[in-house]
Structures are given as C-alpha cells and as structure tokens.
Image (tube, rainbow, N blue to C red; front, side):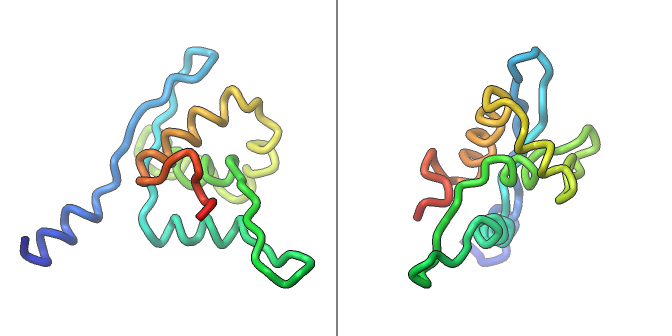
Length: 111
C-alpha cells in the first residue's frame, strides 16, 4: 500500500450513534492518536511515590468524542463538571462506543 493511501485511510474517524436510556440518540466518533494521547495525559498525575497514576475519567472521554448535529465537538472543558455528575447509565454507553471506535477496549487508558 502506498504511504499516501495509508495516511488517507488512517485519518478517517469513524462515527456512530448511541441510543441513551431516555431514548435520545448521541453521535460519537473515535479519537485520533494525538487526541487519545491528550486524553491519557489529562487523566495522568504523579502519585506519592513519583510514578504516574492513571485515573480513568469517563466524562473526559465523552467530552473528547461526542459530536453535535454538524459533526463538531458537542462539549468543551467547561462542560466536564456537569458531565461528571451525570448518571453512569448515560456516560457508560458513550464511553464504551468512543473507546471502541478509537480502537481500544474496556481497559481504555489502562495500558
């Protein structure tokens, strides 16, 4: 495969619709490698022993990967406090689909 074909195929983010418990539908997408790195950086802090500690932040992944009707990001950094207070029944299906579209499984961010 020519390099140009590889990069053209590898930069397309898949999207999907997720039906939420209240019957509404949200549009989500997979993250790019750079976006996934930014997500992991945002979820990593230094522990008491000086080693990196990863704190899974489902709301942050939902912020990164949920889209509005036009395909633009629906949420920004200012929405995180509210996203973090939402029921896991809403957050979990979005997190799972965004992680799957990004090519990672249920262990998202844990390795």
